Length: 156
Length: 405
Ligand SMILES: Cc1ncc(COP(=O)(O)O)c(C=O)c1O
Image (cartoon, rainbow over all chains, first blue to last red):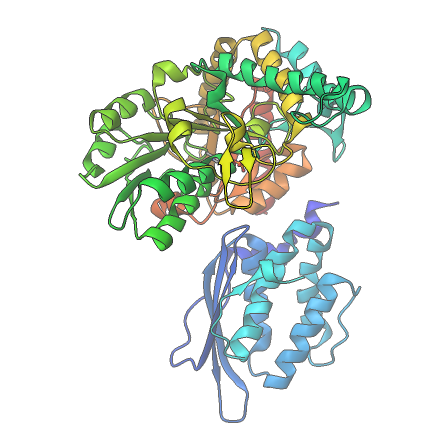
């Protein structure tokens, strides 16, 4: 185990200065997520236009560096993506965090993949995987406009 | 008191954590176990095992005597009047559920009030919450002051003619505040209100005298007292155990069972339905011996010095903020670090073999009140030393280094 793998510079950067930490004006979809074990909380706001593109995505919340960085990097990458692409990206990311050595999707470029792969350090810290996946599960709930709060304890 | 000799009795410290010596600062969550307790479980299963209280054969009689001797040891340890005032449960949680359930059934009606404090662990809130739903009782919370303490006055303010039960912690598992439970008990009794004390954090650290405190109920988790998991103790005044209805039904707690009806057994069997945690009870006898060998007064003194030392060290560290500042504080150091979340702290400390807890410590009401989503908590046991607290501080500085890159 190496803490430097977990707390890479990019994670600390996004963790300390999260991008898109705000509330989208006139959002039309949103969902709340909660990790009861840690107390991490995230609320994701989406504005989806008539062509089913994400025209804006933002989040509010508080949590550890991993959960904040994950939400920050995720929201950055999801902007201007189509609904279908979002689904594919979420699945690919969760697959990578759980077992795959890398991401397979063609939707994002290598540079963007490297950013997401920086979160893969949690694989060595099983208790922290939920921190990395909270925003992603919550995004899925927001897309399906599920009213129920996403709760990481219900997954895996 | 020689801490090195005491520490040697705990086999866990022979192991390395991530190639480091273990610095165990999570005793408020659960304490480590001395060899004599571990051995007792092994010996009981290998040489003496039998179920208790049922058969007449040699092993059964011997096991029953051992089981009952722990009850008597516990009675003496907390100076209860009668061994029948000691009920074994699966933990403090079950002890509190037992009281909430049976007391609620018999004595509570719609509109009655139960008084808790903002310091309570979820296990001294959720069991009472059920009565909200079931009976329409109201739950009030006495408020903490700026130092994270509960004073006699804050309790007094919340007592109304409808208050039917006061249930409070002895020692907060977050701020470390030790409550004036004797004074609160006497206040409660002056208004004819019974009082339950959640003694989870009190029992491992403080000298207990039930007849002196005079509370009606006192709940204990044995695994925090250098004893096995799966075991708790409910101390309850005999008059309550005689009047309250049984809790769980099953074998061992009955007198006569007929198709038309059932009569219940005497104390202590009335509240110990089914096969109990026999090996744990017997091994817990060794925990009491262990505590008695050192002497709880010595433990109190050692831990109080350590707590003060820990406070000093952490106060000197500018990025640390201690949670709560109670004058009478025991064995718990909760803190936050500027710009670093508690879970990140715990992960980084763990790499150095420093085991702490991060989160809300089952006290969401308190964390909401403090406006904190999570805190880091170092908590002490008899085996800790000043060296452990220095190591804690060093690892905290390492957190800063990693985050300030
Ligand atoms: C103050 C307090 N009350 C109750 C409990 C619950 O104890 P248990 O889970 O052993 O039943 C704990 C343990 O975490 C505690 O610290």
